[in-house]
Length: 160
Image (tube, rainbow, N blue to C red; front, side):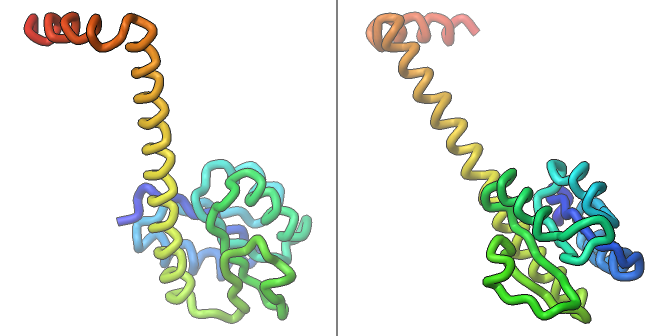
């Protein structure tokens, strides 16, 4: 169902990470796990959605979240934390879940983010197609317009 969506789990607690991985994998998400900030940085460009623990052994997750936003502009992200954190403290996060949390609820949210990711991909594809069409019309105009290209195209089509 979600084989085309990759989730980056940045969590240093092995039990929590494993439980999230199992639940997301059961929904057919591709899951990448990073126990720390350095590993996450290596994997960040391979992910569509990031689930991030703010307290990491080798750095603050907020820095990683800022890098995620710089790289993807509007990439979906969820912060999980054992501390009391407000939306104002991590405005880059799409949502915040406080530990302990229900993993099924986390999966529901990630599924909604997957729909957003697919929509973003579709918009990119439409922009690329529009750009190609514009270039095609520019090329036709440069080659003498439709009056010249039309008969040539008709000839080529009738040959096959």
